[in-house]
Amino acid sequence: MHDFYSDTKTKPTLAMRQTVLDAEVGDEQKAEDPTTTKLCKRVAELLGKEAAVFLPSGTMCNEIAIKVHTHPGDEVICERTCHIVHFEGGGPAAISGAMIHALDGTNGFLDPEQIRSAIRPASRYAPRSRLLCVEQTANLAGGRVWPLDQLKAVSNVAKEAGMATHMDGARLMNAVVQSGISAAEWAESYDSCWIDFSKGLGAPVGSVLAGSQDFIEHAWIVKQQLGGAMRQSGILAAMCLYALDHHVDRLADDHALANSIAERIGKLRSVEKLLPVDTNIVIFDLMPDAPTATELAHLCESDGVIIGDFGERRIRIVTHLDVDQKSGDALCAAMANHLG
Ligand SMILES: Cc1ncc(COP(=O)(O)O)c(C=O)c1O
Image (cartoon, rainbow, N blue to C red; front, top):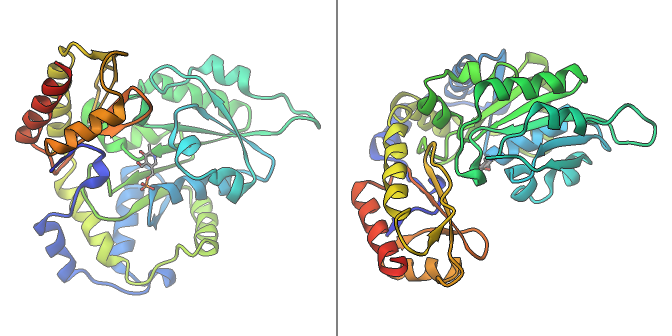
């Protein structure tokens, strides 16, 4: 099967698996796992932060950050399509007692004036606007890369109002490769930021959340509360280190493949509203007379191709380490067959 459902579908390569054999390990909870410590140090440096903590998932990075930055009743401002709103099981409410103030963005981006007018003046009636969360790249907008100036400007507005800022960097390294701008520069105006190893970077498990020393100490308490502290996590961290060394530059191949798929699919009769492709995600809508998204996903599956149906007419295709030019050709042939 050619699986374009998500870049989470990557399986660790043989070389990645082999790094595990020599990994030095210990008790992570007691800071005795040298490989995990090395990974955290490396990601903290990469993101220009003082410290970092290894976590099992990106969702846990977001939820711990929200818990650390807010108090129950506080409000989190974010863009309406973001992962925190749609795919974290209501975690901000369940774990932090936080309210979400979701704003309609453009391409998954917010603008400074929107933030300014969304921030509530201090009042004994209103929730406290406490945290701004952004997603780089913006997944459901089609993997769009925020313009750097805009990303900094929205953070500045939030900070002027005394708010904290957090970046969901699930695909930050895709933005780094697409833009040539370093991860540290992207993350500079954000108090906390994380990257995910289990997406385009191809590791099986693991995310690293970074911030100030104080933020990470507090994050560790929440990690412990949630049962996220690990033991010999160097087994996983070794594969994440391998990904940093070997799987970052190749993200450019994923972007090129996504672009070539979009170019071919965009010409099909039943495709409308193909979103611009910045990185490794292709999103488009189907014309009303075409099969529905679910029907198309089933048809493609019988042709050996897996795609994502996101709503009645919306399709998402994600390129990654485990699909290549041949997979792209199979995908485009299936699409032409059913949508041409
Ligand atoms: C933008 C974004 N944030 C967060 C996550 C959550 O990451 P994880 O699957 O590691 O929990 C995802 C996963 O797809 C994502 O796309």
